[in-house]
Image (cartoon, rainbow, N blue to C red; front, side, top):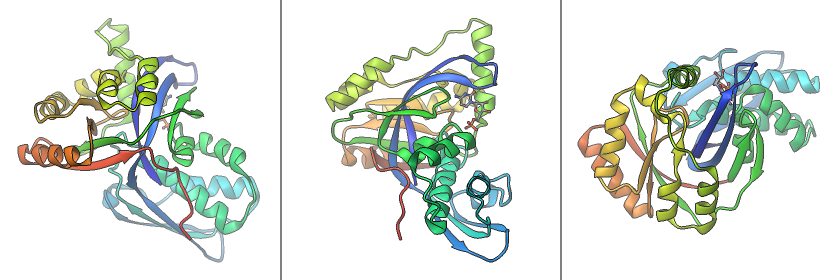
Amino acid sequence: MPAKVNVVLDVGPLRPDGFHDLTTVFQAISLFDVVTAEAVAGDEVSLRIVGEGADELPLDDGNLAVRAVRALAARTGHSPGVRLTLEKSIPVAGGLAGGSADAAGALLACDTLWGTGLGDVALAALAADLGSDVPFALHGGTALGTGRGETLVEVLALGTVHWVLGVADGGLSTPAVYAELDASRAAGLPQADVEVDAALAALRSGEPAKLALALGNSLSPAACRLRPALTSVLAAGMECGALAAQISGSGPTVMFLVSDSGHGHELARRLTDRGVIRKALVAHGPVQGARVLS
Ligand code: C5P
């Protein structure tokens, strides 16, 4: 299952249910976690995690992948007995929807293993109950997300978009970043300028220079206030030749737009040499959503 970036993320007002209405363009990128599901007797869901951030993640119902299995079992009446393995490459709590990707993968893997025959619409509804970004992890490609982010419409993106992801040490709490945005709005602080239509037009044109002008994220200033070092990471990316730089989702991963993969590797090397980030990953989008490998 792929990670995602928000090419543009326009956050509306806080809703009575504690979520925010948003308008976003998601893009699935070539950075993947792999979920393996094996049937076991009984009702136990066990989870093993290897790779990126394995030590930091819960292995019980605190993990969205485990909750995904239980939700599918409850919906279909199937016994939840399964042994899940997550091979993680997507940084944890980074604004790349890694937890959502794992949940989407667990849903799809168990749906296939159990032969539930639920169908895409029912799976997408289960995904939306699990988290705002889970439906997109199933869907993939490039899509306009509205509502909490769970209502998706495919959008046209011409060609391939190339990204470098600057991965920080430690995560940022998504609710904390949204709360900081609300507080900053209440205090009348300056806000990010976000133009969704411009981003859609730039994606249709397939021109990186146009897309560079159209990136935008309402959560960027809030994430930078909570993690001031992010401002220097954004600046370092521009100094090192990125076409554009912005916070990915609620951060702290920073996404840099580049013109092609050669440019991406060059930028990644320069950023790593500067030591402003823990790791730089070169990726491209759009890629497919969660899919069954065997
Ligand atoms: O849906 P998900 O579990 O990913 O959301 C995590 C948190 O992010 C929510 O509890 C909420 O604080 C915030 N959020 C939001 N509006 C959205 C999506 C997420 O306020 N559309």
